[in-house]
Length: 426
Image 1 (tube, rainbow, N blue to C red):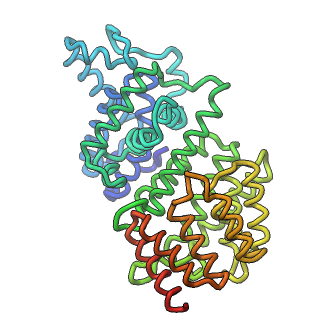
Image 2 (image 1 turned 120 degrees about the horizontal axis):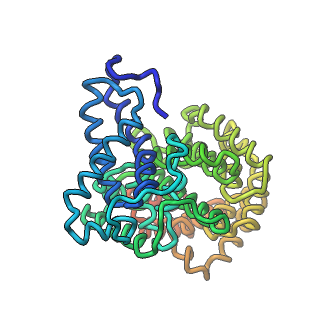
Image 3 (image 1 turned 180 degrees about the vertical axis):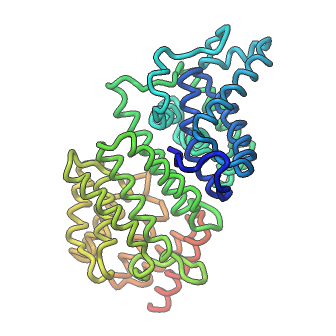
C-alpha cells in the first residue's frame, strides 16, 4: 500500500519513486476494476490511462492522500466513458464480462465489502488460466500484473512487438472463450492453478537471470519483476511453503548476480566467483525464508531448490561446499518432483561426492530423454565431468558441441573458452 505520509501538496517525489509506486499499484487497481466489471480488455485500457494521468499529475502536484483510490476513481471514469462512447458497437458490448453482452457495466455482488482487498492472487490466477499456453501465460502476467508494456515484453523475449501484441491479444481471447471470470477458483482447483502461477513466475525469473538467446547474459528488469510479483504473492499466501520457497530461491540466486561476470563482462563459473561480491542481505533473507518453510509443512520442489542454493551461498568458498548435503537434497528433489534438468545438476553433486565417473554414469541415463539429450546444459555438464575425469579431448568436444547448441552469446563464448582450455591441457 502507498505510504500515507506522502500526500498531495507535500514534497515532490522522485520520478523513480512515482514509477515504482505506480507499478506496485497497477495490479491492485486492475483487480478492483475487474472484480467490479469483469472486462479484461476494457479494464486494462482504463487502468493504463489512469496510470498515465498519474505519471503526469503526481510529480507536479504531489501524491494524493490515497493514491490507490485516486487511480481507481480515474480508471473507473475512463472505463465508463469508453463504454458510453462505444455503446452502439456490437463488438464493444461483446468484450464486456468476457463475452456476455450486458446493457451496462456489470458489478459483482458483495464487491464493496473490502475496498482495500488485494486481488493480486486472483489476477495472477486469471493470467495463468489453464486454457493458455505457457508463453501466453508469461506474456499476460507481465502485461496485466507486472505492468510492462507490450514493447518491453517483446524486447525481453527477443520477438517483434506486433508478434507479442498478437500473443497477448490471443491470450485474452482464449480467456473469454473459456468463460473465465475474475474470481477465486473453487478450492478443488485452486492449488493446481496456484502451481501454474508459481511456474510462470519461476520461468520469468530464469529467463531474466540467464537469457535463452541474444547478446545479454541477463535481464535485470525481468528478475526484479519476478521477485516483486512473488513478494506480492507471498503477502496474500503467507503460509504457503512453496511460495516462500520460490521467493527464497529467487533471492538466493539473485544474490550472486554481481559475481557472475568478470570486468570484461564474461561469464564466471560458480566455483570461480568472488564470493565477497555476493549480496549477504539477500542471502540472509533467502535462508530465513527457506528455513521457516521447510520447518512448517510439506516439502516441495521450490523449497528443496532453495535449500540447495542456500548451501552454496553459505559456503565460505567453493572448496568448503557441503556437497554431501547438496546431493541428499537433490535425491529428495528427485523423489518429490523428478525433472531431467535437476538430474543434470545432481550429476555434479554425485561427481563431487562419489567421483566424476559416477556423475557421468548418471548423465548417461538421460541420453534417451528427448527433453534434454541434446540440450546445451547437459552437454556442458558432460564436458565439465569429463574434464574432472581427466579426459580433456572428450571434454573439449562436449564443450564445443554445447557452444554450438546455445543461442546465448555470452554462454557460447564461455563454452568455447572451456573447449579451448581443454585442448590446451590435452
